[in-house]
Amino acid sequence: MTSYKDKPAAIILAAIAATSFAIFLLAVLGHMLLVVFGGVLFAILLTNVATLIARRTGMAPGWSLAALLLFVVVAFGLVGYFLATAAVAQAQEFLADLPTYTNTLANFLKRQPGGDALVSEFSGIGTETLGKMASTSGMTLLYATIDLVIVLFIGIYLSIEPDLYTHGVVSLFAKQRRKRAREVLREAGTTLFWWLVGRMASMTVVGVLVGTGLWILGVPLALALGLWSGLITFLPNIGPILSTVPTAIVALEAGGPWLLLYAVLLHFVVQLFESYLITPMIQRSAIAMPPALTLTAQALIGTLFGIIGVALATPLVALSIVLIRQLYIGDYLGDTSAKHGIGAGEPQ
Image 1 (cartoon, helix red, strand yellow):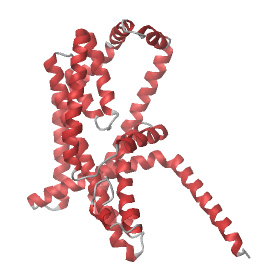
Image 2 (image 1 turned 120 degrees about the vertical axis):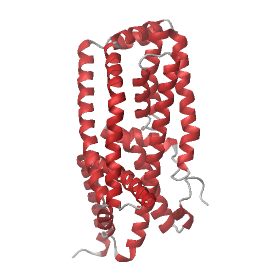
Image 3 (image 1 turned 90 degrees about the vertical axis):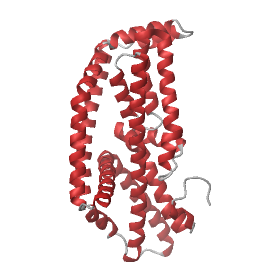
Image 4 (image 1 turned 135 degrees about the vertical axis):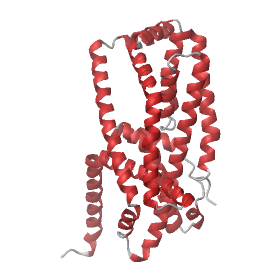
């Protein structure tokens, strides 16, 4: 029989075993769990918008969801018909002229202090290496497309019967805790919904302003560059850098250093407008996201799970903040202000 003195050691061993098993599951199933989380995010967006439509129109929830999905399909079809062809053509033109852009950039850097060393550092990359990089990028795009399709189907299925899945999660808790569990799920869903609304608003504003501004400046491929800038804005903090690089390269080739400067300034002004006006307006209904915490999460989760980890790191941080505030600060520490959506600032 195990004595009382042996129990602490047994508890420690059990904790180590449980932690090791959790890490093993995360390593094996982490990517798929992120895909499922992406589907949950999409379902939250569909469910909340469909609920708003139902309240405004008096339609049944099922019909409002069907109308929303039909609208999304038609809208994307029209956008694809009018814009996708031109955007794809411009993207193909960019890829075809990439060697020219690379040479122009190399010549520009050589004229700058220390530029020769920088160019020589990258000139060692041979054709074979570039081919491998292109092949890897192609496979990454293929896997990302597959993940996106899975996310869409999971989101649609979850949004058809959201109460069924919510009830299933709540039923895992003790009866006296189910009401509280439902409240926490509702708070988490609201936070993630408004985060998604903020990202979509930012993506739209950035894409339109950058595309229009580049067109006014006379930068080639303005439509494709604006579309890329809008899409990559989904990644907070990292997106603005990734969107500026191709614009800078095209502007340098098309008009030299001055057009490069104007294009970079355009990106800078648009990002300031998005960061200090659009995002704060949306976050009034969501949660304040500490930039350092967001960047750390993007680096860690992105290193472990690739592009999908980078894309979903920020909503995972938002979800974690909600759970910590509600369950630990609110329930365990007894700070009732945390249960009422107080932003992530100093404790009240």
